[in-house]
Length: 304
Image 1 (cartoon, rainbow, N blue to C red):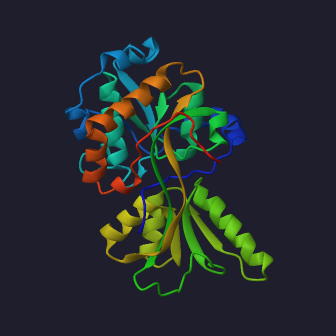
Image 2 (cartoon, one colour; image 1 turned 90 degrees about the vertical axis):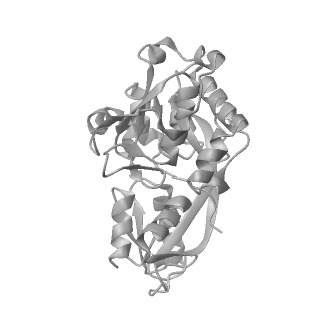
Image 3 (cartoon, helix red, strand yellow; image 1 turned 30 degrees about the vertical axis):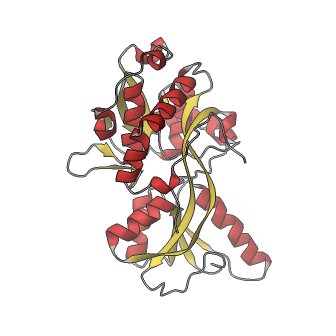
């Protein structure tokens, strides 16, 4: 069974520091800013005075949290074509976190690999985009964990190209730019060539939705992505199937600057409060991603 979701991006910490200046000009490339109105998760969430008091004045002075997000990753985060608002369970959950802190949200749609540099520079007050909390990223930002899961694969129904995720040598596999799935395929491909087999043909696209479209059109043999993204694509297209089992589980985390002070503790407290009052479980269950729920959110909980 596919478990949870894990948008595992593979940008090295050194690259994040070096590309910070470039990121400032690129952060709005994927769409316009979208201000959150509270969402279904926030609608029934009351502010916690103690947690609100922990939010730095620089953040709460305008009553909102400025958020960096790559809204090309349904069902976690995406743009609703009708309203042009950024939606998804990840958005609903963070809207509730913000409401618990007495704040609204302002989402800025950006390229994924520009978000952490944007958090470092202060352009964004937090990054909410299915980030995997790993040791490399913890060198440049702090994380508050809120979910866990792994990588999954999909092929056209019937798996006509006979793709085996454990032995995809010579196959064309689609992945999104900057993800850990890119690293995963690179490692798997090296195993192929070391064994005298053909390399895996990586087809890397800027957005996950482009990868999905490539597979449906038969331009690639299979794709690898976070498990809820795979599950969502299978459900919505009606033309794909999951192949193999999910693997490499790890936590998602909200990305905050190293200089955020008590803000990370406030966010951690908000997640804990939402778990305690049932809002967290309700949001995940309504969106069919409850299998990745956690019970103990933490600050910087990466194991690797």
